[in-house]
Length: 252
Image: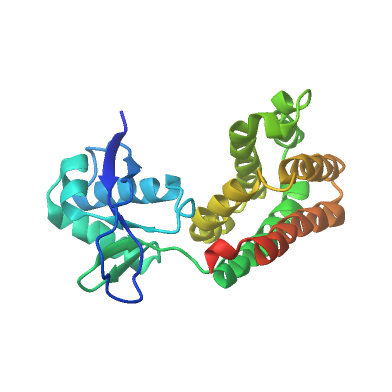
């Protein structure tokens, strides 16, 4: 079973506090059990990375701070492999260390998020292009079944389920390209782009527009229309970038 640990949150302060404030509610980072067949460092690294990928890091303005002691207890390993794992994750850009404050999961600015979505748009549109050449009819056809439960009801009525399907759809496009390197390249973008997709999908009727876009993309893939599939996927992601620029001021 997954182990949950409570991580205190702490907003960056621009000046010293002059009065005590109520403490924010603790937030939980969900950790998966670690594999006993690999080193403690690698086990800790895999468990922490998966937990970071699953964490909703933009749901609150406060950053998630990691606590070595709590992580050690939750994973059942000493602090040394925890520190080694966090060092690797910091090198990969997932974590940030601040002297005398601790280790935090990295949150991106609005400008950085837009740049990441633009990069995603370039990679995913190329993946769609490759999918028209490399993917089987069966694999392309499986994309339709991701949205079967939303055909007779509005996505907004099942927003959590639709959000998961939406994210799985974009992952599937990358996978259907047949490019392992592309999948690895996009991995570090995924944590942030997925979080923003999850947050915005319920806003301003985006879910209803999203499923229309998805059906058009699937139809282009089924026709093996390389140029159309590439264009539709690129425009779909760039529309998200424009939405973030216009409405996501909480990222500033």
